[in-house]
Each structure stands twice: as structure tokens, then as C-alpha cells.
Image 1 (cartoon, rainbow, N blue to C red):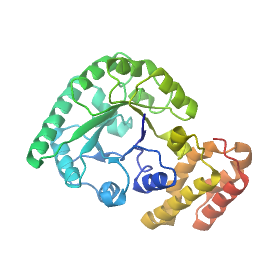
Image 2 (cartoon, helix red, strand yellow):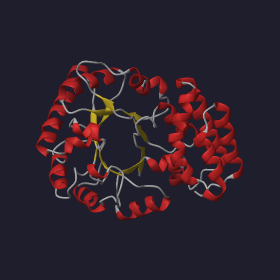
Image 3 (cartoon, rainbow, N blue to C red):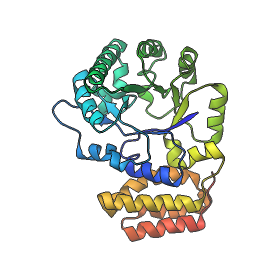
Image 4 (spheres, one colour):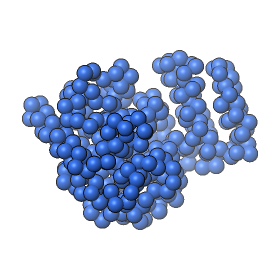
Length: 322
């Protein structure tokens, strides 16, 4: 089964991807945090830096695109194709209120006829670029199952079934749920009964049991995509493949590498703030009885010295409960 790292804005950029792959390995593909397609401007500097092939050695990276029209998609696709990319992903799942209000991300799901129109336009653009540049391109979609009601999914799924998507990555929650409540596994099962090839499951995969239960229920599934589960345990994919658990020594190497790379990229202060987002998740992998004080110190740290001291204390006195 293929194992994919989910895109998470401001978290799973190239610094995180390289550190995870080098220290733990296990991922078949990484998906970039979404790049917003625009007619009046090129990619932002940070977006260019994130998908620059030189910053992603030994990584299979798929750029994720946020768009609601074929014109802006074409401009961005041309730029990414020039960089060497041949596989792309459409974001139809971001539940952010500001994104949805603009008809993007999960907002694409509000009107299946408009989603159909968009996909038709995107594939026309792809065929045009293929002909002009003698390349072969592919498009996958990362989607939610609707805005808020179960009946929406049938119409959305019917739209996806009309197009030659390389993969359909389904997070079986509704836009209104954000990341709360339970996944609707029956909605995913509808897609599974329709087509197993190229179907990827995403959502609430935190433990080996979660993975095993999914693998047992959906035999022949092409793959899974994990996000928060990887932030809790960056060695999760390796454990699926080999059974080897993450240990404190390599987790410390991973976090030290992130701090050094982020500090070089954005300065120590911003690096600490970025790492606090990650610690929010990784903290769940430590025994609360032995880690509470050190984790609190990490959260309160402001200077590199305070941060490093708190992290060292955590690894010295705390136990992993993976």
C-alpha cells in the first residue's frame, strides 16, 4: 500500500519533508501545501522556494494547486511543468472559511455542476500543455465528501468518476466539520465499491491499529495519506513498513535538524514559533506524567537557549508512549 504525507499549510514544507525522509523515510509521496493559482501574479517567493526541485532531493513531491478556474490553473501549470513536475493535485478539501467563501478548496463541492465545469477545463488545459511540450501530465484530487449533508457525496463522486484522475484522495468529512467529529466511513466505502484503483484514504490515521483496521476493511486499497498522525510520530510510515518504533534519540535528531534549518531559513525566533506548532502534536507521543513540565517550558520558551534547554530536558526525563 502506498503511503503519502498530507499537505499541511506552514508545517509540511521542504524543511520538514527533507528531515522526515532523511531521518525516518517511509513516504512514497509528499504533497506540497497548496499553491494558489492566480492570473495577475506569479508564484510567491516562498511557494517557489518550497517546490524548487533543488530543495527537494530524493523526494517524490506533488504540487497541490488551489484554483477555481482554468485560466489561472494554466499559468501555474506551465510554471510548474517548466520546473520538471508532471503530476499535480487539486485541492478540493481545505475547509478554511476564507477559502470556502471564495469558492475554492472544499468550496468547490458546493455545486457539483461547477466542479464538473472546472475539471473539464483543467483537463483541457493539461491536454493543451501536453501537446505543446510533448509531455505527459496527470492530475489527482484531494477532496472532502461535501459541505454538510450526506446526500451531496453521490453527486460529487459521480463527477469525479467522469474524469481520468490519476488518484482520488478522500478525507471523509464534510467541510463544516473542519477536523472535528467522526469521519463518515460509509461515504468512503461508496467510492471503494465504485473503484479501488487509485483510491487513497485520508483522515484520522493515528496508530498502527488504525492502519491495520483500514487495510483489513478495504482490501486492495491503493494507499493512505496521513497528516496529524505523522506530526505525532514522524516515524509512523517506517513503523508500518518495518515494525520499527521511533526512539527518543532519532526523534531528538529530527527536532534538532528542524531547529537548525528553520533558524537558517527564518531566524531563531520564528523557528521556535514554527516548532511549537509541531510540538502540539508530537507532545501526544510522550508520557504526560514525565513530560508535562518540559513541554510547558517548550511552550513558554522565547530564546534559542530557553527552547534548547526545554527540549533537552524533555528528552532526558520523558518516556515515549508510541
